[in-house]
Each structure stands twice: as structure tokens, then as C-alpha cells.
Length: 584
View 1 (tube, rainbow, N blue to C red):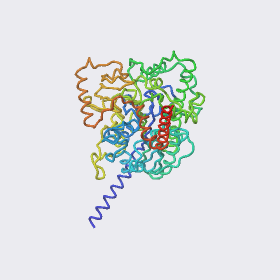
View 2 (view 1 turned 135 degrees about the vertical axis):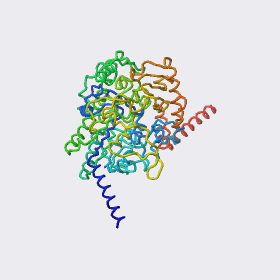
View 3 (view 1 turned 90 degrees about the vertical axis):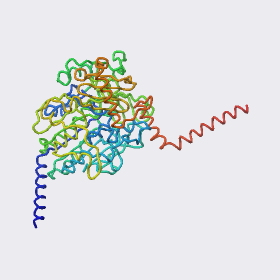
View 4 (view 1 turned 30 degrees about the vertical axis):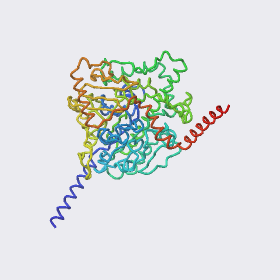
């Protein structure tokens, strides 16, 4: 009887504490934009209309020194696990991974069983969990959201797709676009607009469980602004004429606004990227085409913000908004690829006519010159380890008791998001074992002190933070950054910068600070060794590797028979011609 009573009391205490947690713990909404540059958001210095994101920024905290990986899947793997991508299995994006790396430890190209997601921990801790949009951390059955902690899910397993036609690939690296709903192949509509669809489905999920009394975790992985750049015409046409002065003028304007907002030093140097063309040397026709590209880009970003506003309106209507924490970030910097090597395929699938850009069946890209402007005042863009590739906007709003409209300047990282969310949910990470199995421990640090107004550093200034992706390497230590970028954008040499005064990486300090340079080189080698980094093959280029992998992983398996028959026919034709010549 005594044991029964003790058990009953214990269960009552657990139930009471669970009920208290459900009443006091906040809802959490994570918003992941795709390929947005550092100053694309209005509250970070951009001219694009993002009123809903700007409202969150005014209500919360902007992080001006926040870093991710330079491509989508590695960032998303860390966002979900809080573990360095070389230790969670996504050492590189599968599409850009050299064949010699694929399957090696840390380079599976998808999450390993040895990591636990924040969704699993929140689900276990009493949260309703749901995801819509881009997933991109593995399409194996054990890696789909229903097995990674999400109660409800409609996701795209790929790196991207068309924004009007969910079945249309954006590059020929797979046979079809992978869509999954609750762990099974999804039945998608014949057409949609991606940002609208992902928000629609999330609102449906929220409605389906709003009477449960549980807090919720909602993750939205937008395709905006991944290629192909596409948006409803009413958003695009609002920017007609806005970019007539070109990318260099826009880069300067954004630098000045970001400085005026207090996000970067007022005297931040502004370098010119070698991939940026001279606007004044373009013909009138070329300039108008380039203007339209950027108009589409801006329209796509504003459309995403508009549909975010619909989600916010729903939460206000249901009374959930005031108890919701919002986290917004981009998965990497702006996309600077020119897709020149894919033009033969694109010509068979899409139009690139100026009058159709942004619409159904049209393929728009940003290109390296506009990408440099979107990253202003930073150097490089997506795939590279310069700040333009890995420093992105981060906004966190709705934290109880946090000051409004503040900017935090110390070094922060995507691995810091998971410990922050767990702190908000009053939960703890299991450490190195979960459900009887070994798991990787957290690599990040909670941002709650910063969110509550502490301006101090998140990590000790003498603690190194290493980074590598596709052979582009970096190490942070306090205000200093050691970085090496491969050609064609980089020179393959190590450089040292003070990011506090020079976030654009214009003044190399390796000769003036030789001791710091050597010490950080040693720190990087230690990071590479402890995380199992693999050297890149000679002449590696991530864009070219996408085409190589597409040929090996898709074209050969799909078209092996017709290719072999064609080759056999060519051989027979050549042999026949030679025999005929000999007879003559």
C-alpha cells in the first residue's frame, strides 16, 4: 500500500510538472531561408521589403556575427543537432562531395544514427513537433522527419526544386524530386507556390493540434531564394527600376545602411570581388537583363516575408503569438554560381527570356555580381569560407523577459541554436547517450545570456572554432579569423583578419601578427584531426563536382543502355569507314 501510494504521488508530481511546463514553456518557430545574403533583410541594411522579419527584429535580437556552413545540408544538419557537420555525417553536401569521400566517416551525406535532433528531444519533452519545406539531411527511412522527432511533416528531401511545379527538378542530379509526408512518399499538387504552400501546410498542422494544451515546435524550411529564382509577378514588378545603378552601387548602399543600423563598424572597408563585372561596361540590353534578375530575387524574398506574415497573423488570431519564440536565419550566404556548365540541360527544361523571368517555366539566377551585393560588405558567397558565404542574418524574438531591438556582436554559430532552444524549453541534452545508444554531445553554447541583454562573448576569446566545407577552411578565435579559400574565388593561401574592425576581410594580418597566425594554424590542424577532415582532390571545384556527380549518380544509371548502344554504333561506324577507305 505504501509503495502504491508513493508511486501515485510520484506520478502526480510528474504530471503536475508536465502541466506547468506546458503552461509556461514557449512555442518555438524556426524559419530557415535559403541562400539569403547578410544584408538582404531590411533590418540588416537591405532595400527589399521584409516588414514581418523587421518587426521580429525590432521586438527581439539581431546577431551581427552569426555563422553557418556555406551550403544548405551541412548547416541544416547542425541546426537540427547542435553537432559539427563533420561529426553528424554531413561533412559535405552530397551533390558537391567528391566520389572518394562519399561514405567515409563523417561524409555519409546524411545524418548518422549517432546524433539526436532537437525535435526528438522536444517531442520527448512534451512538445507537438511539425515541419514543412526543405529537409535535405537524408532521405533514408531512419532519417525522415517521422523518425527524427516530428509528429507531422511534409518535406522535400532534395537540395531544391522548382517553386511553381513541385515535380520539376532544378538540376539533373536525380531522377525526380523527393517529397515525403509523415515518412511516406507524398502526393503533391500539380502546381503551387512554394512559400505559400509551406505556410499553408504549417497552419493546417497548427490547427490540427491546437486543443492539445501542449506547446509546439514548428520548423519551416523555405526554398526562397534558392534557384530557380521565381515569384508572383506582383512582387517582382514592385522593384522595377530599383536596381538600375547596378551591383556596385547597391553594395555600397547596403554597407552604409548596415553601418548606420549599428550592425558593422561605420568605417568598414568595402572590397570589390574579382567575380564582380564592371556595370558601366555592360550594354543597355545586358544591364536591363541583369536588373530583372535582381528584381526577381527581391520579389521572391518579399513573397517569403509576406507568407511569413500570414503565419504570424494566424498565431495572433489563435492567441499563441505572445507565447512564441521566433528564430530566423539563412542556411548560407547568397548564391554566386553562374550555372554556365548546366546551360545545355536548362535550355531543354526552362526559358531564360527576360519577359518570363520569375514565372512558371522560367529559370532565374542571381549570378556572382549581385551575390556580392547581397553579401555586402562581406567577401565571397555560397560555398566559400569568406564571411559572405558563412555570415548570415539571425533574428531571435519572443524570448520572455528579453530586451527589445538589441544587436549582439560577439561570435555565434549555428550549433548554438539547439542548446538555446533546449534552454527555452527547460530541457537538457542527454550528453553522450540517448535511449541506451551513444550520441554525439553538443558543440554549441546557449544564446540565452545574449538574448537577455548580456553583451559579453558567447564563447571564451581564446577558444578556437574550426570550420571546413569543400576544401574551404576557417578558424575563429576571439575577433581573429584564419581563412583559406580555393580557386577560382580564392587563391589557396591562408590569410588572417580582424573581424571586429574588418568584417569584409580586406586587410591581411598574417605578417603583422605572425604568432597569432602560427597558433591558429596549429589550432586548425588540431580541429581537422579531431573531426576527421579529408583533403580535397587536386583541382576540385564544387560547381563542377555537381555536374560530375550528376553524370555518375543519375545519367549513367538512367541512360546506360542507350549510351552504350550509341557508343557501340559510333565505334561500328568508325570501323566501317576505315575498312571502306582501305578497300579503296
